Length: 229
Image (cartoon, rainbow, N blue to C red):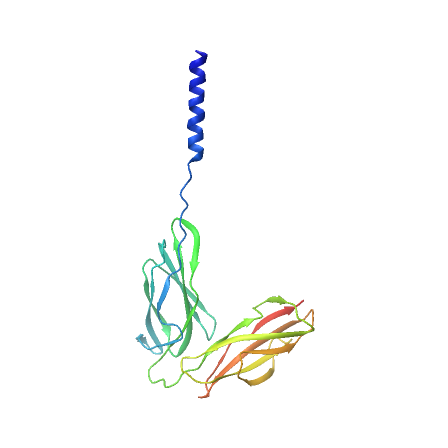
């Protein structure tokens, strides 16, 4: 009897050991989608007019591996408003204002994972009938980032940004900078996309960039702030 109990107990240990060695298969996270249309920095003139000053644009992207659904995000670069819509397919028509610059990006989601994957944003210009030239895209303020706390070497700091336009041509920049929430003009007609400024520790600064092209068009980045520690 003791021998039988010992054999049974040994069998249970072996079964438990085999069970503990089993590895669960990891759930693959969704991968980034591939943006297709509207193209990067493109003039979108394929929208379908739906009302005065509005047209329907069909956004398209390619599948992201392991994704079950997508979140389409569209940002109006003039007022900063972001709209979000869900889709199970890889295209979605959206009504947009004409003669307006936008950026868009897609988030891949999976029903089996809490992880997501987000594309880089693409800018485009939704044109309207009769438009001959287009304002440049609002500059992207790169450094310092919004609400960032930074250190300055000997009180010197370099502001940097990125500008782009639908039309090819020379862009110039007006830099507004200072400790007031509505900063004044510091330097106009800049050709480079960076500029050195002097700052003081313990101070909050505000800045923005107005981008201009050779046709007299302009765009405003909106004000960003940062603090110096």
